[in-house]
Length: 437
Image (cartoon, rainbow, N blue to C red; front, side, top):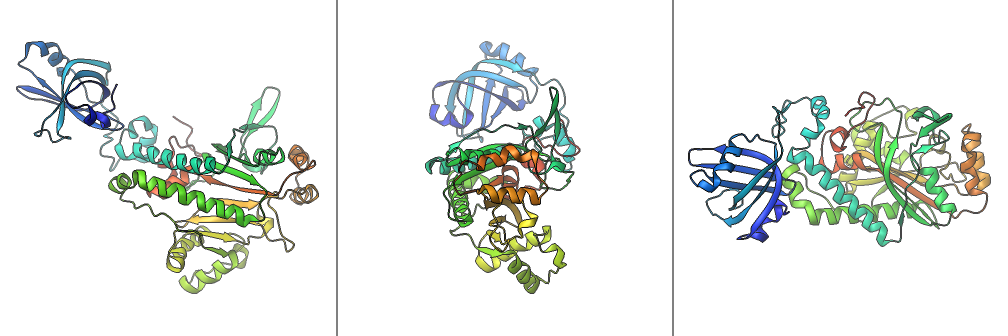
């Protein structure tokens, strides 16, 4: 079977294709079928007057748009055909699946169609070329990010998603029944990534689902999302983590631009900007000082322990105006506002960062605390005990200095293609009010 996007290689030959019926035109002397698959479209032309076409003509008379068909025939050049200058002259047509009724909406014109209606019928919504292309782009970018890590001696692992302790924050986990006891859906693979460091695996990554029981109804939050996580050993500081992330993103975006940049521009109207290295960075306190001076944005001192949503947006603006860059690392967060496994310096400052892209946070990363006595103190300061004992044991028998980060794949895709919400950049969105389909 030949994909429609590859047909030009088979001009003058017998071909077999399978695809959706995109359109049917039935006029006096001829029938036209336009077929569609993920790679392109092609016209099929049937002369009604030919006796050998009688059975096919009758079949096409009953053929409905969005049915699927298998067609065999000869592919010929025809300069009069507006669609790619070629057509298939069929010798047989088989309906492999018939569309049995009117679609709930026209996926080629989604203007005015409620987003919830689209998500209820996501399998129809994704027939829209633009929506389907989102996931081709996402897949391509993740492939190149993986490629960068493979080239740098990382190993891909797969960690459990059902865990026996409430991991990072008991208030934000989904509880499930596990035979005669409770289990929880993993918020992240963080503990297991660090276990791999203690095991001597040195460089690992994972692309997998994570679960957050947050009742958040924003354009960038979901209760289940795909996270691109990595961890690596023998670092000197969190600067090593930042540098690796910047290199990986630059590599991924450069290769994505080379492969799909023109198509992305055509369909989404978005230019892929390949970032220069190194990425700019600013301390959190300096960010608030500068956005107040530049943009008049003021918040109470109590809010300056993290970036507000509006401050993130202004950081995106600041990065462009001050550094001519789309990315900016923000450092020097107070450690008491972050997870206990992040390393702190002697002044209690977090040895980690957030990465802002186009005015939205896409990453939290850090050097982890690998010293047993220190991480026990950190856990105790957060009121964590037996629930994380298994995790603390990772550090009792030697563990190299290490660090890592996580990127939300759905949010990354949303920002890359400038789509309005992660509801559209996720294959199937999960949020507080959506558990189907």
